[in-house]
Length: 135
Image (cartoon, rainbow, N blue to C red):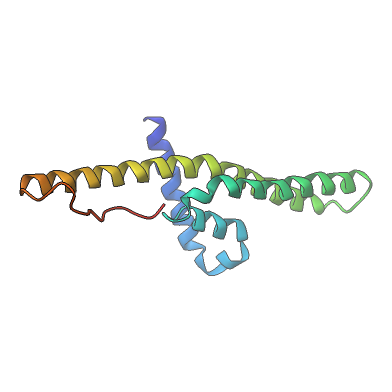
C-alpha cells in the first residue's frame, strides 16, 4: 500500500469520525477551523491558520510550569489537549497547500478541456470560459 493511499484512508476515517461527532462539534473550535480551511474558498488560509498554534504552545509552556510548581495533576490533561490542538494547527498549513495544489490542478484541467471542446466546435478562442473555483 502506498503512502498516499494510507493518507487518504486516514483522511476518510477522520471525516467519518467528524460526521459521527457532529452534534458536539461546536465544542471543538479547532475542528471548525479545520473544516473552514478545507473548503475550496478557505484553502488559501491554511498557512495563516498555522499561527493559531502559537497560543496553544504558549499555554502548554505556561501550564507545564504551573504543574512543576505544584499545581493539580489534572492540568496534565489540559496540557495534552493544548499540545494536540497545536499539532493540529501546525499540520493544517502543509495539508491545505497540498489540497490547494490539487484543486488548482483539477481546475486547470477542466479549463483546458472546455477550451479543447470550444476549439473543436469552431468557437472563437477569446470566448470567456467560466470553470473552477474562487481563489
